[in-house]
Length: 429
Ligand SMILES: *Cc1c(COP(=O)(O)O)cnc(C)c1O
Image (cartoon, rainbow, N blue to C red; front, top):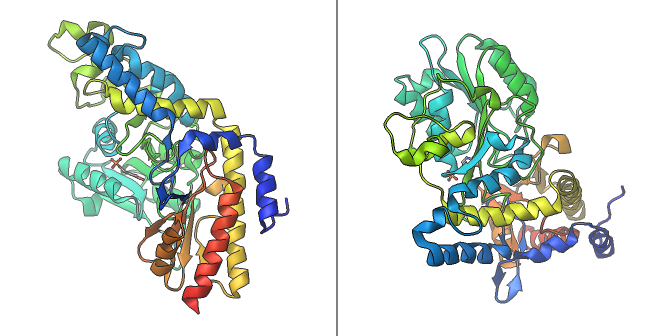
């Protein structure tokens, strides 16, 4: 399709958008009574209007039933996570039994590494992306130390080639092959938070398995953003946060995935707690941990009802809108349009002020574009916020903009381009 940098074109795209009514189900931040163009759903998704009543519903249950709420009422808390499992499974291409909402992301990374990183003197290395999100770096480093190994010898990071920003799948696979006898675990982010690069998860998973390693994924920036098929790809484990692309609110509940092939594996270590114990016998309170089958067996503490209520409200919107295809198709169209608009700004300025480092092919990216602002980036970013365009800033020079198919419009993107152009002319002249 020929894209056009004008309001009539953007409005026509919005008019033809089958998902357009979902925008009205979200609350947009305002400043001086003017709504922001919100392009920061990769960091914190917007609040669904349904979130408040979902939370109030659970506050009412607490008020009306108190402790009996665990077993009484319309949706007893004891089984509440099962409702979420059904809705979470399609988001990551899993069976409902393979997923479970619990804890927060970094905590789950640790819990899953306890099970799936079991180094031996020969096979003890972890392969990860260079420049991974810091929490993942710290979690991996501390797990390695916990097992008595030296992070400098045990962690292999794959970096971009000299002068490049992105990883080549071939380089990742070559690193796996080079360390074939020593890698215990391949643990990557599905989409890199900084560049927005979506890695070839299926190929990397296969390569890891071919040398006998376990393969896990941190899907913080992938879950609810791009289609992943964890079950079919035979990924061993994964976890994600739900407050970015899945709009569950700050500090929202995390999700885990454990592949069905591991359900009967008695050799997996766990840091156990009572809520992972066999559901039917949990309240016998007996000695000796017996896990509930499936991902539920990794639960530690009792169900976090309030954050789950928020996540549930958002998952219901995903179900209605249709994940994957309708949302993904719109996401691709919006991101392509944003890419076109940013390039138009360069054309109108007469030089390349904005360099997009995110891959240009939708097979290698989700909704996010990471844009290097070559001159005066921070001033331009601050100017955008003043003009009610909210993206986010990453040192030293990257502006991340992220159009979300549930609540962003083509007009949002057209307007962002207009504001960016005017600001750039002002600040750079
Ligand atoms: C956002 C993000 C986190 C955040 O972890 P929390 O435990 O939720 O604070 C961790 N890892 C990655 C890759 C992220 O993008």
